[in-house]
Length: 164
Image (cartoon, rainbow, N blue to C red; front, side, top):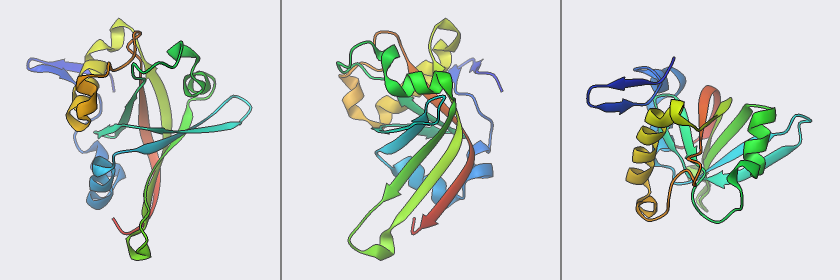
């Protein structure tokens, strides 16, 4: 499916019911409420790399920004280099509590794309709006860095366990 625009403004890609087709309602709510996830990438040789990230879940996609914090040239970040070499990724959200009856995790597997350039401006803008809504810090910290980079993960499979 390609990104689309509607008369009221940009619309994120995906389709109606995309998240329900992949996740139960409890899993989708667990994912929407989570504040941090872990993005796992691997290079062409399969060497893994995992980083904690902020994100939004919308219609079957995870959107995570490369924000404006000083990290040097954002295109050189390991996660972006890995995605260019090997777009297969995993995304984990978990909950740990001392009360082990409340433990839970949701693991999504899918394909990542780096959204950049004018061709993705509408989709990036809509995702950035959702990120600003979820994380008030982004009202002050630039999203997407100077190059406007954003990672989109198309969720294709999942595993979950525990109490959501």
